[in-house]
Image (cartoon, rainbow, N blue to C red; front, side):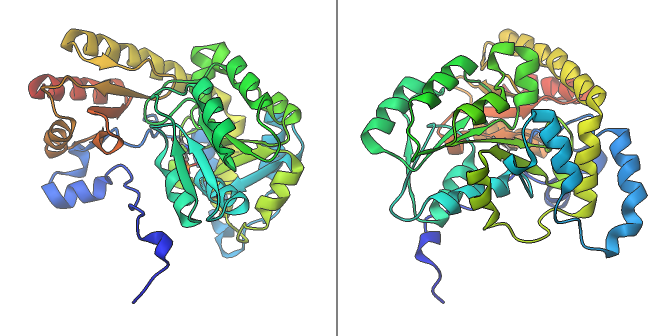
Length: 364
Ligand SMILES: *Cc1c(COP(=O)(O)O)cnc(C)c1O
């Protein structure tokens, strides 16, 4: 059977290896498995969220509120924008899908960083768009601008902080860059880890209201999957000028967010204490990764997120080391597929991290 040719050169996205598969492949008990591969919140999610979701389970027979009014109100209050500036997706992944389908086709060019979130390229290929990447590993906005002038891409992706490297763009630099891009190019600012970045360094914080009010060609993306601890609920959002949101809405399937997910995200926004605590613990534990890397003489990228990227030395192989860890039930992300001899490790709880250091000391 023949399929859409555009799918021929798409590599299926590999999420962090699910615990369930490690149980099956290695016969390790679930309780002995530690997953530090998908940047999930190791402290779970807010108790208030759990209580609220339990309370609405009986409503499962009804379709969700497709206006999503409560969550939209909460998000627009948080960012001080209007409800008409917000679209909610099944993860911000789905918003990425909408915006690529809305803006690009097989004649389009999409510009992104050399190393960045894998889904941008996958959705770009859905529509047959050409993917252009920078040469530098960290977002170099000077280089972005040079390529932009030459190629006039339909879409530019800026991921700050960047996944899988953890570095972040300076907010002022980003605003200056966006100002120079003309209105035909859509600029996407993916802030999946922004809650962490702004807690670590105010100069990395993107004020979303100013970003979208000053630039009608920019969309900001956020998610509940990381700092809010709701990866399993699949809720993300895009914030932009109303004209952009209206176009994206044409692609949205009805009821794309479940009743339970809507409730979870709405309540999560009201429990800032939980998020604050998670972030404080995250950076406390990250210090231990920095000390560990120092001691082992391996490079660690300064991270504004809840993960660290350890760049191994040439006599250490990231694929081999990830596999050794996996056999012991420790799941991390091998970055060899990104052309890096590095592993990305989600900063876990104190116990999880200690266990990681112990195994790594044996393997390095
Ligand atoms: C995790 C992540 C997302 C999307 O997460 P969803 O679970 O789909 O909301 C988007 N961008 C980056 C950079 C991420 O790391």
